[in-house]
Length: 323
Image (cartoon, rainbow, N blue to C red; front, side, top):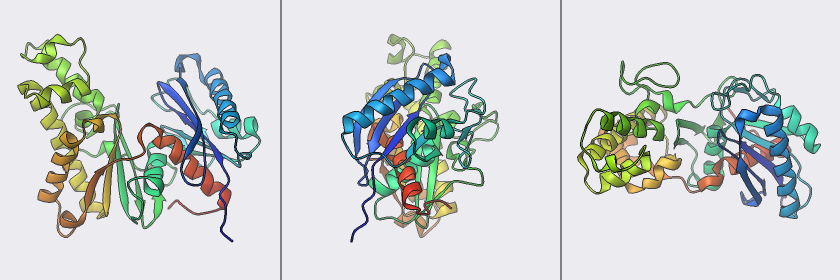
């Protein structure tokens, strides 16, 4: 008889929004809920609202009782104890036992996972990575995060914070990164970095169509580059160069079958993916350079919810998805 995976509740804690849903064994989200984080209210009030959203999702999903709660959030965190240690996107959230709080609120076991690592598992199991064994995932958004699946197992690191692929160094001594070092991938390819480059150049008097936009975003830079704006092209080309360089190094290190690119910056589509794929094909060592695929993510805005759901499913079924 085929084993039926029960539904689980999935909670994603972002710096600007909370996303919640009930995830079934096929990776589908039911009872989807989204609300502003309002992180300045502090962890207890934010988590109270998050759990209220969870109750609404369960009610709207209309499915059998959830068997576990999966939680995704940016680190640092301790996945084994379910404690958020000091995530920079949630200032003042120090040693918050979110796993225990969620388990108490819903009366079922809980599992906490780094958001990008959860997203990697979601894409591997239900998205672009289906059918692969070794896959890398990078999310290019406000920052750059990532995760890896090696031999069918999610790699989490010793304390659950592995996969900081955004802090591969692409230009030693280069632009300052949020981690404190100089020249990380995140300092060149993240949406934040792309927008900062544009604003710095405009403040220095560089001519560009972007000057007509108050505080241009990475999306604005991408659109302007598509029209041939010289400054936008320069910034975009540097971002895709940095991403291509980092992905090439990662391909050489892991020899994956697939590299999945997700996050808001990837909405630019081929303008981002094609230069990265070309850099890997040109610069990675054979045979990986010939065999690896570079593809956009498929799960969209719900990727962390799906991924946290996958982690919770593994908790219920006792599967070992981590290495």
